[in-house]
Structure formats: structure tokens, C-alpha cells
Length: 331
Image (cartoon, rainbow, N blue to C red; front, side, top):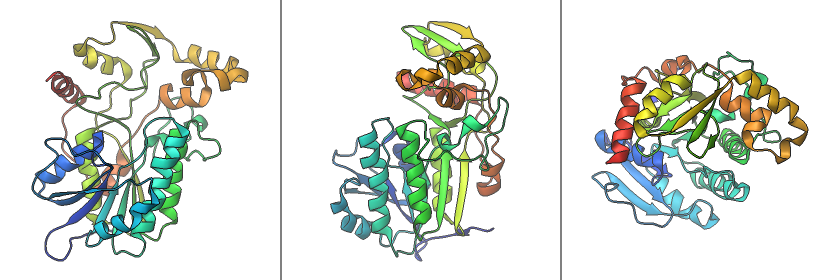
């Protein structure tokens, strides 16, 4: 399969970006400015923050959750060669996920119907059904997905619904599934273990953390926006250098957090979750087997599919990326 590089016929590529004021959206805008790309950036209401302006960036105001936005979105998308859809609700509030993630995607697709462009959906590596896997397994683009009926939380259910809606649309489609996105201001993640005050309970040490630096994800999204796929292509976006939990905590120690670490073996934690399974509906996530396996089971996240689809990109090692993220967080 080959993907065609595209532009708008004038040598200038124009991209519509949803979720432009979010953590990832801001990184996409920064990378687009660096590449001198034309971007129409969507915001709901608040004025874009300082630094979000710049040559080639145009802003429109529209709330994807409101069907009244459809004509405005359609007008904005005319003349664009691609849409990067990064808007979604990141929490587990079911109503908010339905409005922002699911309904928002439905309204966007209605606005794009019949337009000669392609879509780049920001999904999540969390859509895979890791409950079917055993410790040490690889998570790849061929790993089975969860189903909406059995999704382990509203966020995953929303991402699955997003993917299903986009697959059903008559558009060439990239589905990019980033791992845990980190960068300045967002250095911690839920794959380390539960916390009690200053204490981290580290669940096991083996396996890789599926990390993806925000600038890496932004570059991959723009690569996909510049290459029209033939049909559907789904790709996991993870960094080439993926640390285990011990190495992550060593690199994160410069932040001063956590103050103390209590290591507990993965098999012991898994045994507790299985014994408590009859009470699962009343337990926190890390004591429910599907959530525990998704976040803490030692797994591997090869990036062969990403490199095959979009090529390799030069990137610093994890330790340097984390050191820079922590320094920028302090500034």
C-alpha cells in the first residue's frame, strides 16, 4: 500500500485541527508552525493562549458537542486536505465522554461528508483488549480490540465508539493510537501504581511503559495529515525508547516525586484482584482485573508497525526527554 503526499494545489497544505487548545493540540500547532503548514485550529470558546498564534494559524470557534456547529465546520473544512481530530474528553465521566468524544465525532463527520479530504483520528493504545493477553506479550496493531459492551471504562468506550464512527464514514482514514503521552507539565502516568500520600505502590518492574512524547505524537499526526492513505490504516504511536518502571522512576526522581516507593510483585497484586472479583463493581480500578492488566501487566509495545507506515524519526532517549520535560515544567 502506498500513501500519496498531498497539498491544496497551490503548494500549501491546509489542515483542520480539532482539540487545538489541548495538551496534544498545542504541540501539533507548534510543530505545524515549525513546518510552515497552514492550520485552521478549532476552539470551543476561550481565546487561544499566548503563543498559540502565529503565521499560518487561523482560529475558528465551535463546540463539537453542539450539532449547530456542523455548517461552520463544513465551511472551515472546505479547501483543507486533511483533518486531525484530536478533540475528546480525557476523563471517565460517561456523559462528558458521550458529548465531547462520541457526539463531537458524529458532528464532525457530518460536516466532512462528501469533502475531498482525509481524516486522521487520535485514538488511544488503550483500546486493545489486554485482558486476553498473558504477561510478556506484544501489543501490536493486530491485538484484538475491546468491545463497547465490555470496555473497562467510559474513556475506552468513547475511543472505541470514535473509531467505529470514523470507520463507517466514507473517508480515507488514519487511526493513530498513541501510548501514554508525556511532556512538560505532564510527566506522571497511571501505569506506575497507586499512590497513598507521598508513597507510590509500584506494581512489578518488568515490561515496557507505552510512552509517547508529545512532540513525537505531534510529528506523527502531521506526517499522517500530509499522506492520504488508501482506505484505512491503523498505527500505534509509541516512542522507540520505552523504559520499564524502575528506569522511569529513576528518571522522574528529579521531580521530587514520589517521596517513597513500596514495591509489590505483579503476581501478588493480580491474585488479590482475582480474589476480589465478586466485588469488582465497588472496587477502584487497580483492583479490577481488566484495568489492572491494561495498566500494570508486563507487556511489550513494538513500534514496527509505526516505522513501516510512517518511517523512523530521530528522537532523544527517554532519560533526556524526561529531564527536559521536568526542567520545562519548573520554568
